[in-house]
Length: 216
Image (cartoon, rainbow, N blue to C red; front, side):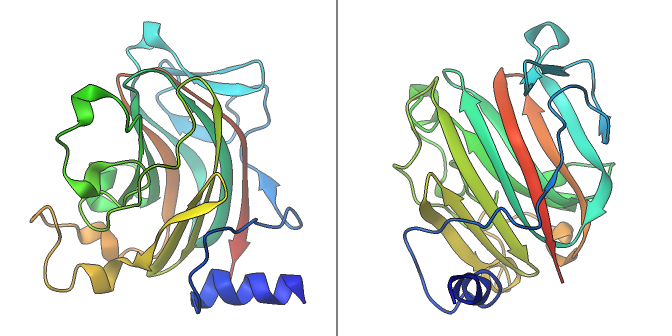
């Protein structure tokens, strides 16, 4: 019964919830904890170290690291640890060329508490679909602690769960039908599959326990 309830919530978004735990059954590891096999892109800035994907400051911390495989609908679980002022992103349905925030979709990964981000637009804070749907704030753990995040995609619906609380739930095509919040073109909103990636902005971050369950 619990699995049936979760499936309805994941795929139908028939109710809003503040707490949701994705099931481990049927998940596949995207990161083996040892190397970046299965990933493509900037392997100078990103490295495997002690069971984590680390953004390497010596490699400038920029650039993108993508899964070799493309994904459509899925449940993605991962953990991340921020450093002060850190900024990164989770790309979904992305091609390998172009800015994933526009040619795909970008889910913000950001140290919301940093003073330099105090004047951002609502759609730029952690968990937001960049430029399109703002996320709720106040659920990140302090910098230096591990956060757990789940991203559920059933095109065009998306849900982001941070540390057990739903911070974003919506339909990105519906949200943008009268224009996007950032007033820019986002052709990637129409894409229903593509690569998953980490989108660097020159800052140090850590990722681990990255796993995915594909949905039909």
